[in-house]
Image (cartoon, rainbow, N blue to C red; front, side, top):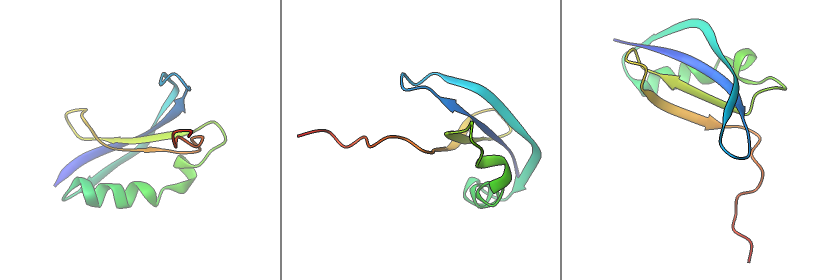
Length: 78
């Protein structure tokens, strides 16, 4: 079993992450895939007006998953 932490923040257009918050919940799961499933179920933490980025870290602090919310269209212009 692994231990994971869910984080959220605001990603500026230049990529800088501000207003970082960490969920008080520790996710214990057999894999990062299973931890992501648990993280996505925590909509109250993930979906707020001041959030457009969420990510999951393992017990070593390494990012194992990220989700950019509310990004503008990034399709290259013709």
